[in-house]
Image (tube, rainbow, N blue to C red; front, side, top):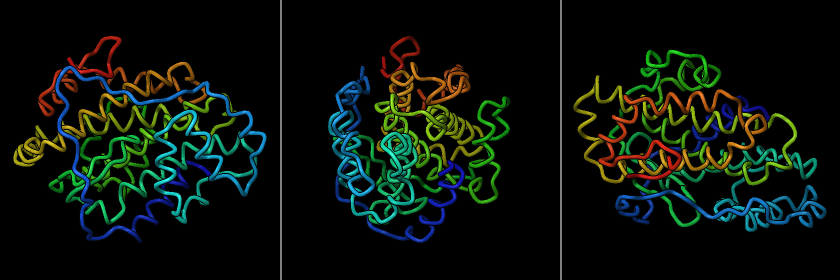
Length: 310
């Protein structure tokens, strides 16, 4: 399934499922003290040859959970949490193990949307949720509505993210999404990337070829959104800057992006284009780091330990 087709499908599915709902009772974790480094367990070289040999189109969910249990426990936990979701079949390629592994970028990405945007957890533009990893999920994160994300377009002065800008910013529907949309796409990108990073040796085609670009681009959108909020919407900026859960989520996602971009860097070309690194370099421009640090109240490292605060 193409990335554009999957985006359209999920938009349609979410339109059916989203609505007023109550927040999950799980409390968001307290802000981590500095210095803090994001990490999570993964074992990308753990043996899975037996699972590949026994793979069939009927045991794909069992295989999915078993593969990630060995290589990326957060993927296993998400698959278990979403095991009964009827839309998995729209995203998983069951024709072979390699095709199955490659389809995990889209499948895990979209099932993250399904978990995050379940009406039991998210009330659109009011509060959101985010599956971060097996041991941490953010819930009832206040959003205070916001403004259309297409307003960040004038700040993008290169073509590195042009194809995604067309989907998320220039599209008539997607471009009007507020902070809810920005955070949702970033979080899904940050599960889709590790989902294929830990299975990279099985990926041969194009199904996961923009995984790194998606993560870098959606972090770009978040940083630029904060800049526009500060410069053009001071009352909104003041509201969201006064929300500890939101500040914590933004910091976590920034560090998490750095973490998985570093882990996936050896597979550039297979899991992303050279543009992913160009976008990342732009993300670390002084004006972006400045607004991030002002918003979160934390200083971040810009050296070889970019997944850490100072």
